[in-house]
Length: 272
Ligand code: OAD
Ligand code: ZN
Image 1: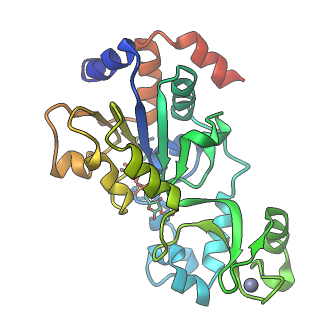
Image 2: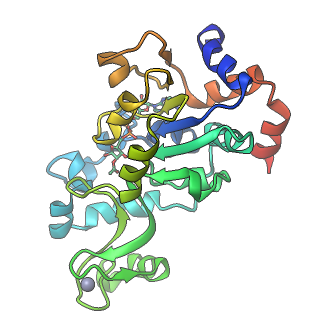
């Protein structure tokens, strides 16, 4: 793995690089959050108990309208607050401290990038987050405090309900059938050609448009995939310069830290 990482390490050692990360659920499995599509352990394989017509229905807006219980069962389990950032998240934080980080496009809704100390400005939550909530009918906002209260309210069966129109309220997580945030498209358009290095990690690259990001970077950009499985454009449209590391994100993060001579600073961050 050390040999395969060489082109990346050399570029980072040179300094003056703009790095973008494109991440997914696999960077957070080390925190104890399941990913979606891994056989046996993935969320989509463990949703039988929710009686869904098909697993993805839990994130479909039309299904939610009829049956919000499945989503709220999951939301209760995944709600930010009980999980801590992984080694890989702290590597992103260290890239920020080293002024090498340009942007983190994440599909994750766990907010662990922020918790590791990466600033909002660098983060693009492509699939939204739990930070804000809106009624799906009248679109009025609901505070996190009210949403959490309703989730525990037996008379509402745990379904947050709009104070204005009694419609169901949902966190601003991007469901299938909803569009991604404006910021995602704006930054993609403005910056995608600028990145010198694109690190794609912990994602199966199956959900579009996110999965297109790594194929849109410039020809001079070094593309790096850190994922258990080879996937997406790294398989269908590979480039000669691609670096593909099929291993655990946290393990790769640790090795990178050592190869870059960043061990002390890294350990300090992790222990903070
Ligand atoms: P997936 O579950 O589709 O893919 C996770 C990938 O990470 C798989 O290829 C795993 O093999 C790999 N993986 C898991 N643990 C790993 C580890 N410790 N180290 C390295 N690789 C690991 O998750 P996403 O690609 O993030 O949408 O899924 C994309 C979207 O699909 C999600 O954002 C979600 C879902 O529907 C919404 O919630 C709107
Ligand atoms: Zn309403």
